[in-house]
Length: 267
Image (tube, rainbow, N blue to C red; front, side):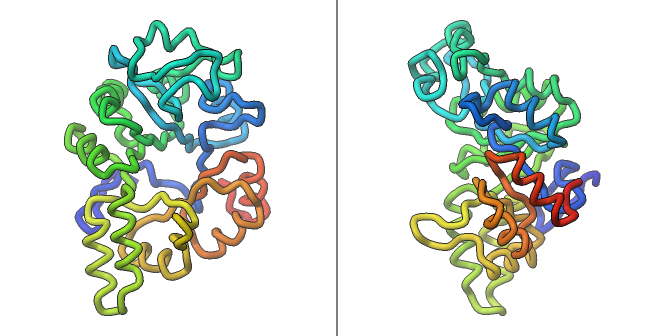
């Protein structure tokens, strides 16, 4: 797909996919080994080339692919990742058996895969930029964060453009803009998402609907994608795909593949 621009935002080959994008949320594992190399390998073996992960940095700047701020929930270790060196974090085992992967290791292990990367803390910005630059992975990543400030700082430091999705504040502005009248809607949506290629959002947030026919239409009119997380029910997958969403993030990579196959949309 090369490099192009929509509403002044630059996008890369990351989005070059025929049909709705299936994203494997923290890989694929039904036995508590999320975010492990084994989970990502299982997703790849199912045919996935879009892999989702969060990132944190250890106290000595090693970027790990891991969701939680601490080791406690899913590993046999304890403690906050940002307060420990890599030598200590690397001894923890996910589900008691699997090592915590470094993002750089994942980029090199699956050179054809594309990675959706959520920056979980300010301390992870610099390490993420260094990893992407060393791996020359700009065309293979989507950089996102709940924090627009973290996201924008990472984009500012990178030497080449990457795909990015809006943070919470930008998404909230988009949701308000999408409700505006037809004449005002386009400019307001464009302003809300001026530095993002799209949205990665839940179906609803705090009881307020986020993904509706109207919001999907408004995003598409502005040239933006809509990816929805974290959808594990096949009926809901079908409903969202019928609305025209551009991607689904799921813990159940197996069920999402089945749904897309049934619809003739698995690529």
